[in-house]
Image (tube, rainbow, N blue to C red; front, side):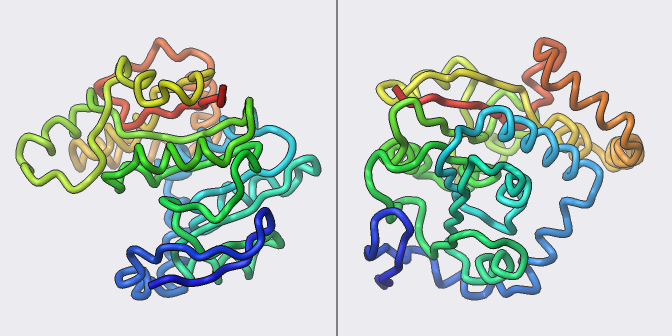
Length: 258
């Protein structure tokens, strides 16, 4: 099914609605529940680390939040007068949720075929998304198409060295998600597109918490304390060598288009 949409950057364009069958079942109430889960200590910690990286690296100009989801990234940038955030999502429910909370342009669209002009965007933020999409390299190609020269892509990818990732792939032969990458494979993913200018071993709290219910309780209780959380965020962002790859579920990185 094709649907025509209006975008703030290139007018009207038709987009491929490749997975509306399941997205139609994701209603506004579920979108609100998804947004609420970031109140959990481990989710809030991961969220705060990601937002710190976004705020550090976002360029002045147009920032595409792709997909926007419940709008947590866009909301964090509302105080940046030099940044105009545009949100895109395949879910009408998420867009409806965002309309109630954000005053920004919103586009119903597919990130595999973005309805934006070539070299029209200064920053793209894509978080908590590509690990669930097998064709993630096609999406990265599309992101790079619409980025301006020296534009930045801020994203996370699954880490192949993470312990749970290895176990899951051994016991589940029909792996449904994007293939995790090792750290030394990342430059190849962006070869011909740009350069990785910042990198973090990311999502260790959820990683440890998922190993055992007892560890989950310990981590959740520890991160309730904002002072501890702030200290850990400082360590993760400023002392990157402290975290081993095997407990980091994700690569969090910034790529600058060449």
